[in-house]
Image (cartoon, rainbow, N blue to C red; front, side, top):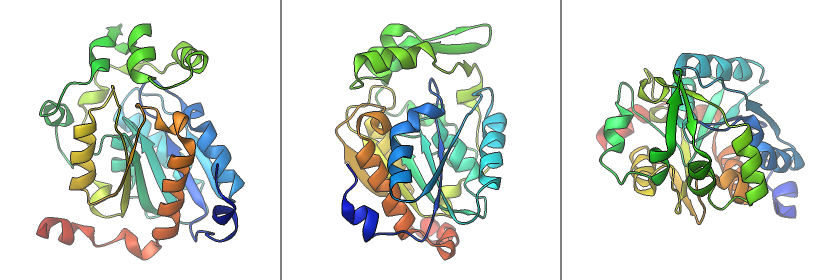
Length: 252
């Protein structure tokens, strides 16, 4: 659990955290992290994405960002990494936290990039009907939710978010990680997003990286570790840190 030191000694200057869920999930997937952030005095809010298009998901995220009262850490899991990459240019966002997440560059074809890395087992379980898709029960339990207590995983399967058939092929027009400081939690036992792809993305953006012995849903199986990373971002990010990363990245 979060230590007394986190409660008493590390009070971050940033008070707001916005959490964005990815495909096959909803905002409740952040519940354990939200409880921990509230326990140390941060204001945490989860976005409920429709997963119908990048534009729709981005609009829902911007609505929540507009409700914040100051500097904000923006956190995305899985596909939501695409969403925070697009919306993280918002002036209130001072730091980005990626959790086993996509992190495309502006205009980049993420699907083509992902093909350079081992195909994760969950890919074979994605089935579409009527323009929207979801994971089969086997793929959800064994690949997406590996490591999650089985009853909890079954409940998540029952409410899984359906993704539009075009969602994973849409491209961002902004790459917020080129402007804002970033943190990245790699899931070493991930069967939904290749850990090798995660490492490539994290290193490319120059993120502060942690590696966790977890499956794709580290926010559920390891909420303390994810909360600690968000707190580190809240302590380390400052409004002035939201500028000037393009030049450094280009030089690298």
